[in-house]
Length: 131
Image (cartoon, rainbow, N blue to C red):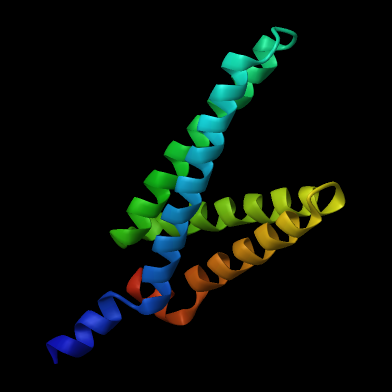
């Protein structure tokens, strides 16, 4: 009986959603580091905008990290913010698909849809106590 409960407590759908959210956090951290390097090495034309974008990306890293951690701890309230993060991912992918690189935009949209689907599937919902 304990094996069945652990499967319900740790469904593969929710575990993969958490892992992919942490991967998303790592990618956003890489983007933040790249923005910091650009801020330090570019000409001082729009310093305020550059720093604001970098700070916004760093806040995004923290937000995605805390949402992923809360979702991994089965917090009911983490599901909504996780879905919002994936909606932002889909929107960013849509923007990239309209400009360049198109392949990255399509990849981001598919990624956001996939992670969002994992979060709302019935096993994940039951594990969060929402069902």
